[in-house]
Image 1 (cartoon, rainbow, N blue to C red):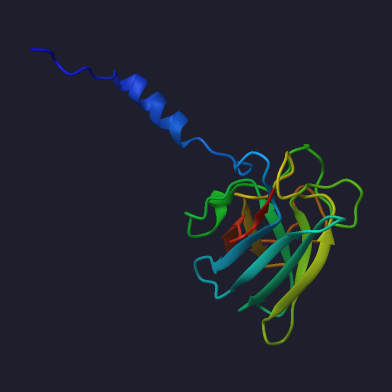
Image 2: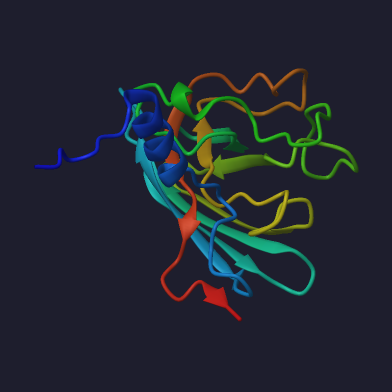
Length: 184
C-alpha cells in the first residue's frame, strides 16, 4: 500500500504565496485598462463617501470625483501605495504612490509623486466635484494606479514636504478595473 505524498510546510507556504501574488498591472496579455473606479468609504469617525473614476484619454487619465459628507473647504487627494483599506484610520494604504522617489508637490509641478492629485474643494453642502486630466499617472505600466489606495484627507494639501500637511484620512477607496474597463 502506497502512502499519499505530502508537501513540506515550507514548500506549501511558497506555493500559496506564489499562487496569490498579484500586482495592479495584472490583466490579460494585450489588454489595456481604459477605465478604473474607486468607491470611497469613510474612515472611522468620518461621513465622507462617493465615487472616483479614472478614464484613459489620448492625453492622459481623466479623473472625475463626486464626494459628499466632507467638511467645507479643501481636502488633500492622493493615490497611496497600497490597496489595503483594512485599518479604520486608512493608514493601511501606506504613503503616497511615488515610484520614482521624487519630492511631493501639487499636480501642476513638473516633478511630483505620481499619486499627488492636489485638492478636492467641498462647498458649504459638503459636496466636492473634481474633473481634471492627469499626465503623470497611468492605468497600466510602471505608473499604474490600479490596485492602489485612494485617500481624501481632512485638510488642504499645501504642497509642503514631505506629504502636503493634509492631516488625517477621512475617506479611503481601492482603485479597481471598472466593468468593461479593458480593451485589446
